[in-house]
Figure 1 (cartoon, each protein chain N blue to C red):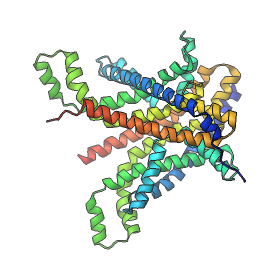
Figure 2: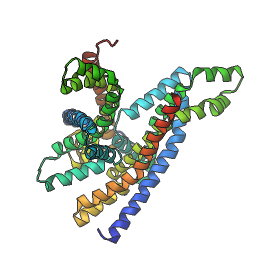
Figure 3: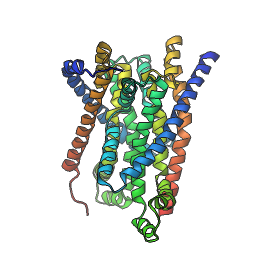
Length: 213
Length: 222
């Protein structure tokens, strides 16, 4: 492992971080709509979103990335691997976050909804000012847990052919024939990204559990 | 864009794909069995009176939970030959799945064991059962029952994770579909069909776990 190899890995790391951020931010926005649709009270909409969530939770992320990658090309949108993976991760994240937040919205006591209806708040105000802030707090440990899962999931972009951290490691290990060193370092880099988040998530979970008592 | 979908290569490859579903099932089931063994063993070691043993288990769990499975399977794939173990890709994949699932299983089972109140253990010991009997009968079974739902979702996740074993070309659904794809270039058709297969597989897994739950944990409490 010389200097050039380390720099190549760090460039891969940059793309892993970029993919994680794009997937998480876009997934949060889309996931919010999924969660709202899933709790909308309109039967057809709820059924459709439940199906959407079930499909993404019942199939491997790798297959989702493949289908999006070749599916986008099929409907005539010429995309590079980067965009296809970003779209795939966004859809994946939207389904998981939608399900996490649905649970959180339903965990907010019913009285809150009834009280805001009695006060004649509009739907948007009820959600924005009353329900979602409480739901967000409830869901925070699970949301952080999913973020860790998403960061690890970006490694699958390497199989689709996008050069992020894992693929950078693959390329280097083929060049210098030291797979254990290379994948050891790659693993440590992922660990440095994920472990603080895991610890923070566990900390929040304990804190909330203590407060609920 | 004048693309017409053509599922002919998929239909032609259907026998191979169905056989590969069995490969995926084998990987998943063997991985789960290994994961449960590692999980229970890890929980026992985690309660050891020797601090270094406890730290080792904690370190193992955190290391596995905070790195991608793809990196783990590559590492194991290259590491096993160095310690003198030469295995085909498929057994290697089972070991990797077992280690990965085992780390999660340790955390889940530990949560269940902690939920058993201390009085139960003391009562068991007072009745003259020895330590192993108390662990097996009074702690483990009710603990497994309590955490069965989270274990189920973790193991469905493990089933989906088997697709990553295609990276070291283990015999399972994804690697077989990649072969059909590279022969026919009908990428979307192949991967779309296989996605549906995975949906059915994960549904079957859930039914299987529900059946087990009804069979072994359906005794009344209190």
